[in-house]
Image (cartoon, rainbow, N blue to C red):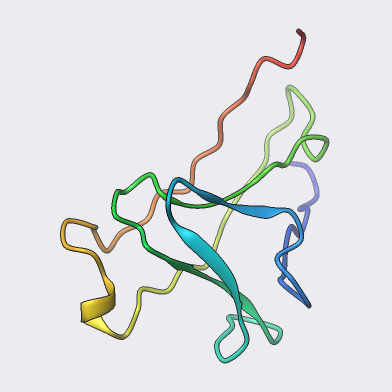
Amino acid sequence: MVAAHKVGFFKANLDSWQSRGSATISLETTQAHSGNNSALVQGRAETWKGIQKDVKGLFTAGKIYNVSAWVKLSDDNTAVSPGISSHYKLSMRALNTSS
């Protein structure tokens, strides 16, 4: 097992975090799992829309990593789009970068 990389604690900004699809992301300063800030994702009209981060250079082929995230569903049920489930999937995908 390889030592954990701590990616993106949202200390002062969203750094290289980006939105996926039409979702919007902003720095949330009133709620956080640890520290003072978190990322707020809004406008998730489809399940694949959300937040993403390029982690190129943080992982080595052939090594085993544990990856985790803290996710909180909105307290306001009207803020959740119909059809969006209340479970979340953390996924990674490798892109062919040889070309």
